[in-house]
Length: 201
Image (cartoon, rainbow, N blue to C red; front, side, top):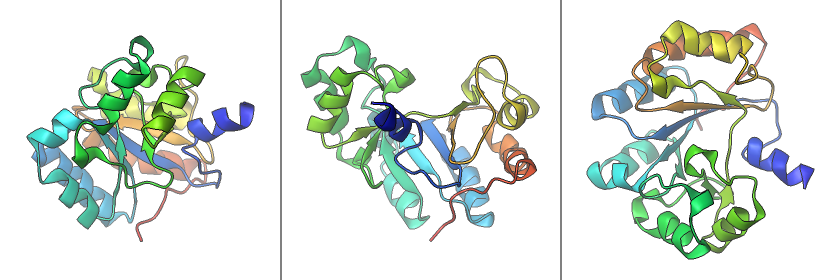
């Protein structure tokens, strides 16, 4: 339904605040930098890290929880849900305990966003105990885009993504080479439109 599509786009939150999200993984140095910036600016984000990332970095879950950040699920090894059976999707979600979501409701972001709005994937994720999660602004930071380009996409959008608006969800990646560098400008871009982010508890 249109209402449920809106829920998926906005991570089941329909207030005015914008949610920052980080996908895939991050080196320890990058994660520390991101967490320090979030703490300094009193921002709570959602980290959609993969199971392979969390397996390789067994302290990440504890670090995120201690920093009062939220954790979503982004599959075990970043497979394409649109090409998987329901049983395979269930396994991808449940395979590693460190990626059990701490959000409410429990959010699972399909890799590439594949199948996020399909009934088949929706039902498969429901059987695994989650709701699908998408985004409204795609910074495409993973491709090596400069900090200035990332900021511009958030502030003004481009032909591939709309600009940030109230209640939006910004997709970034812990692996983005200029993501950490862009964060202060992303915050200024939101302030340009009078938008606020979710605050730490």
